[in-house]
Length: 111
Picture 1 (cartoon, one colour):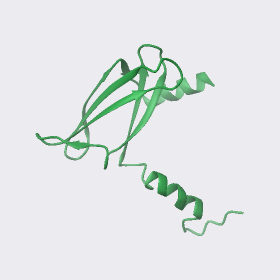
Picture 2: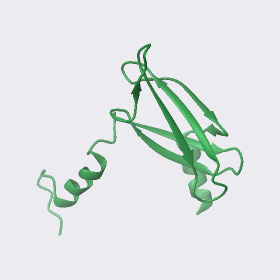
Picture 3: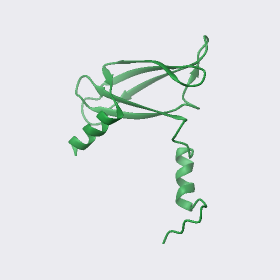
């Protein structure tokens, strides 16, 4: 029996320990497709902790993505953000960026 009295229950509290209780504005999701095998990959950036400051202002993050089902190709991603953590530019090698909808469609087709 679950009683919702507006207070955080034990499972919500436990989940918040692993997600920092914040998956909204401090998150940026990357969706990509490997050019070699077509596997789709999804990963989350924490905009408060994963970004590095740039000398010329703003932030940058370098991320290596690798699938776990097919060819294990490494996709190199570079994202550049302004001072307010708004995306300015993104590049990817050995893959292509896709939308969240494209990612979801691929997940449905694979099941």
